[in-house]
Length: 129
Image 1 (cartoon, rainbow, N blue to C red):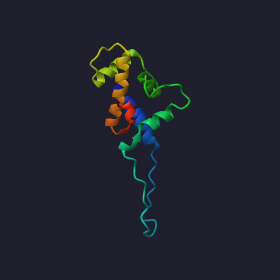
Image 2 (cartoon, one colour):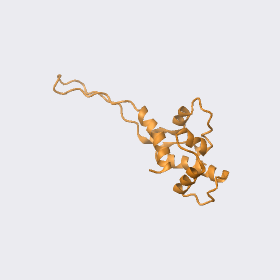
Image 3 (cartoon, rainbow, N blue to C red):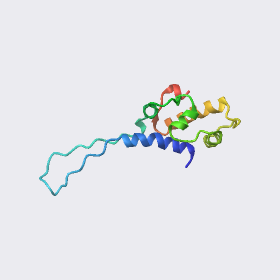
Image 4 (tube, helix red, strand yellow):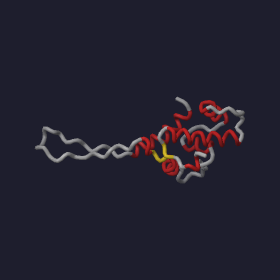
């Protein structure tokens, strides 16, 4: 599993854990027919609010995950070393120098947000540009 998959799973897994549990189904043999019980529809993956989940995860932590790939990686429990960021950059198709420059880190953050959006996450437009 790649680094981006780990980031996505950390965020989308939080959303899945927050989904309401399905209502228990009555035993059809136990009682007379009753009105059907409507169970809540599962939340579609396209409704995963990435910003809300990350904001909740960051509560009480001094991390600038909104603009920093280093802090975003720390927030989801990943090592944010240069070697890990190089691996993420290679995984996401970065073609510049893998030197940990501001250019590389800014590109990585934007690309991760774009990939989260492409995989069904709701990401503010300001994080995609």
